[in-house]
Length: 222
Length: 79
Image (cartoon, rainbow over all chains, first blue to last red):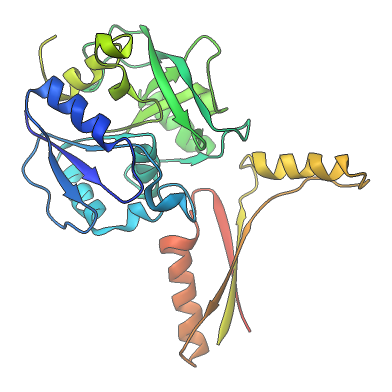
């Protein structure tokens, strides 16, 4: 399975994402730069975490308007799988590929810790290797992960099973609505999540709870 | 031509920063402070002289970049 990682100035989790995809898919992902207007033929495009463009204006706002994101939108429209982690999630909502917005954490503090995640929908291409309702661990590291959507959007997300990951057992680190940690678009091929599953994929990380997400998205047998 | 764009959070959108400022003002002894909402101001210099075109351009700038209309409103003012 071929993958590509989007690179933007200010991202800092790109190497982690590249390492995770290389280890799990067995081949190094292609990399695409912010000014690239074409993305090679791949099965999965990942937008890593960090602080693209210094998070100036709003987190992800400037990155979302770069040429490469038009190419990502075109690929997503054709059904290519897209994952945005942390800043990548913020970029996807700013680009309009996912609904809602990510606001400053309710605590106003940057949070860097391990939280628990409930698989709120195990019937997606990103979670099919998990059990429904399964609770996994994942690291988070962000300042703006407080998911917000208007009442109608929130009802639609919940009703259509688009809420895929929820903070579990009182570990919501940012005050997000309905404990939302990750959502998919209405077609189900674009995922955004604040936690960092790519940082929990092997024993050296202290666990591999995040591995099944990439195995699911890449269609790799467990 | 000079323009000022004011971006504010929509009603109903939680504003943790505004809330913290509200508490800080109370802490400083300012009585009678109700809700505080934080926003952004952009002062933009324009080289053209066509006011109507400037207004249309500024609105497009807000829709495309300066405001996130999911959570924010904007107001355009041309001096």
